[in-house]
Length: 254
Image (cartoon, rainbow, N blue to C red; front, side, top):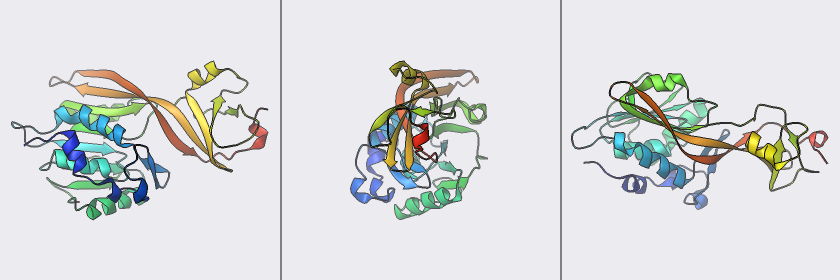
């Protein structure tokens, strides 16, 4: 029997997946360590609702699900409840995040391991392709062809795309580091239009650490039963990420 995304999310207690349980139900991202976050509940709801048509139904009992950047393991657990007889695979790039996801899933009594009806969290390994459902939890500069190739026919991927000009050398348009948002633009630029171009903001979360905030677009990528690929932009989001760049007063434009 197919259940809806709301029912599936209600089955998964976010308190098992965040370090600060007092903030577990806030509709905002929460840091989980190792430079990673758990997305806000509304983003998980958007992703789950978008992917729901590809999950098992009365005439299709199984599917293969891939969660790229599974992090805390929360959304992998939601996917497990949407497809309780299917294999859900979560992929992370750090062993520490793999271990964290497994620990959280086990704490929430979600079956962990290989095989149908279980969630398997692995380090950079997606060999269970093809997948009918792929969720990507971190923004990429473009939609990776490697992930499109891993989509089954039919299949759907939910992915944030766009990192602005994060890789370029920025200048801060503010006389000093402080809390709150300040504009970050290309060197020499001073107009608000430069933010619209670079699509990047920065905030200081401590006197010496910067938090980059850049715009991304959420895309739905569908592969038809005949292998035809269609890409559809759904909506825009702001993506936050810690930057190892220190707040250097020499880089600040007065």
